[in-house]
Amino acid sequence: MQKFFSNRKLIIVLIAIIISMGLMAFSVSVRNSDKTPPLIQRFGNDVVGVADRVVALPVNGVKNSFSSVSNLINTYEENTKLKAQLDDLAQTKTRANTLKAENKELKKQLNLDNTLTDYTKINAAVLTRSPANWQNNLVINKGSLAGIKKNMPVMAGSGLIGRVVEVNGTNSKVELVTTDNQSANRFAAEVVTANGTANGIMTGYDKQSRQLKMGQLNTDAKIKVGDTVQTSGLGGLTPRGLYIGKVSKVKHDNYGLALSLTVKPAVNLDDFTVVTVIKRQLAGD
Amino acid sequence: MRMREKVTLCGLLSLLMLLDGSISYLFAGTLHQFPNTMITRLTVLGLLLMVFFAPDFNHLVITALVLGLLYDSFYTGVLGVYMFLFPLVVYFTRWMAKFFASTPLIIGAIYLIDLTVLESAVYAMNTFMGQTTLSLNDFIPNVLGPTLALNLVLFIILYLPLRQLIAKLGSVY
Image (tube, rainbow over all chains, first blue to last red; front, side, top):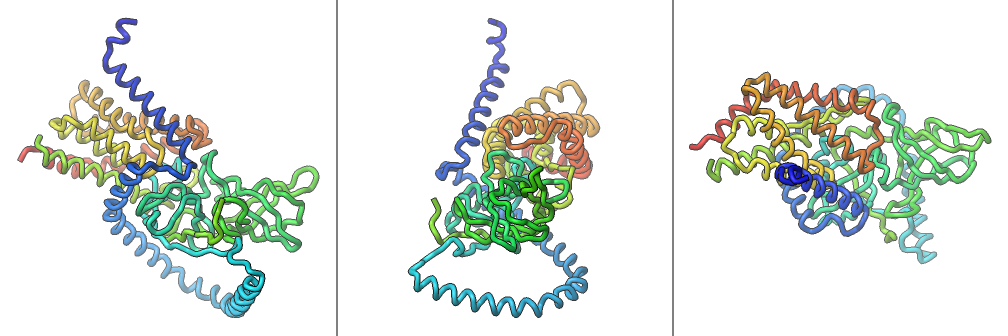
């Protein structure tokens, strides 16, 4: 016993292990609180974030030029495909605008200021990504100064990619929907079917097939492959109607009820340079 | 070693840390392709080479601690992981370096041992915190193996330039 305690280095290592375990337990337990990170940590992150802009600038430049070259190669093929969709789109857009205007008028008559579907957008660029893939975090270049709050949903292109988990002054962290983290905050989603909607929760991500999983569905509405999945706006700071993807597989249980779905995400969850943070106008809980 | 050299070496370490993230983002599609995950560890390479080629840098453990804290805070938000492991890597490397002559081959081998210890410890900590559900059987071939392979390649490419840079920055003017 005497000899064990006389070993100075061993004691230092033991104390270091205890401190690091304590810090880990602390940061995991306060992770979902609104007040984290503490001011000093936020300040440190801002300083690193500013330094990272200098490194990220050339890297993002390289990434952008690479993607422009590959875009150029795909252009012809894409162009023929897009031309076919374009005629349809013009009509849809006109109709959407008319309906939007009408909706606004009707809301005004009902004295409804904001509903679950109203939101504004904050555009941000991706600064960097956590090197180890355990947390699936991105760092984006907008923070509380731009009005970003914890738990806001984040989109890239036309689809949902994740959620803000930490906000600093000038940068914030986004946890992707692909995360394996068991304590991650999951999105409430709904499937739009021919006869009504079915509510559920995005429960995870299948890395092999690169598709999202959806479970805990509440109805036996006839869900078909190809139905649209979007956020339902129930709970948190997520508005209704953010596009997530399309149903690609329906798994039934013994009674024939749809229990879990596989959803093909609308965007490539590994490749994006610009993201949009969604700010719901109706205050959250 | 004077203040000025220490500051430049710390600057180099921070640059390597930020490069880790940028490389990981730039090649996200290649590095994180299912089922393999490759993690760049340039920061560890910097620390390792400083143990060997800047022996006058006597506050390297404290530097590693602060660097680990920034790494944790900036990338993951979970404190205490790299803050503990970066100083451990420095200690471990110093301890192993006593037994061998510092030739490139030996340094490469020590780097691989360091990385194995580091990755396993990070995996153990993430499992402990419930951040991952990956099993050990998947971790060894899908994360540890590719990570070692990637970092060995990076070591071969970067060994000479980084060694010269550190030796130059660390030497007294």
